[in-house]
Image (tube, rainbow, N blue to C red):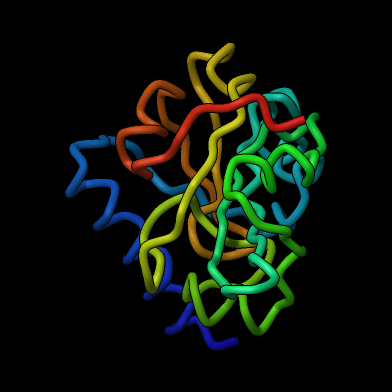
Length: 160
């Protein structure tokens, strides 16, 4: 992937954050922030403060579902299926790129190619500051966890 595309991804995330009134700086690392553990190591925070952006797809209607979960939690897909009223499956890389505009490992909670039904892990609200991907597997941004629902139009739920 060229730096120009990466920079456009980061720019899109920064613009979206600014449009929501979130004053934060996107931080780029030379090392990967693709996994929650990688991101926590690079940032110097706990894994629980990392917002994992996981894309699922409903089986029948192919509706994208975004689950924002704490880096220490694992999503219980049965809980998400109850919330959406349909069986779901983990989205593949092509579907993820098409609906979000970003590659797996760099999917931010905002700035997607289309509106995506979003659920937010209630455990993220235990932390004042959380960190999320900023459009690439090497970029992150911090925000107040209470802003997640507002900027994503997401529903807070117990997802595990």
